[in-house]
Image (cartoon, rainbow, N blue to C red; front, side):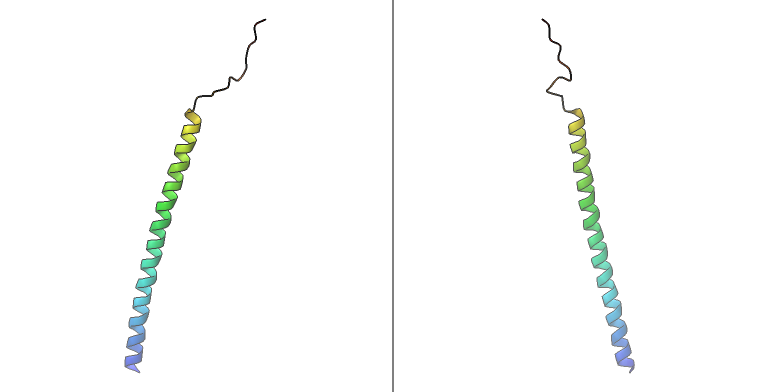
Length: 63
């Protein structure tokens, strides 16, 4: 019984380490992807904001 309990304890400990490593790895990947998305959106918005307008808002005709 002690052997089974010890093996179970080791298994649970290993499993928790694996789950923790996978969770932190997934979180790191998610944060990296999110920062890239935020950066791309921010730069895209900045480019749109600073882009010169090619069409005039109002044209004045002289006759």
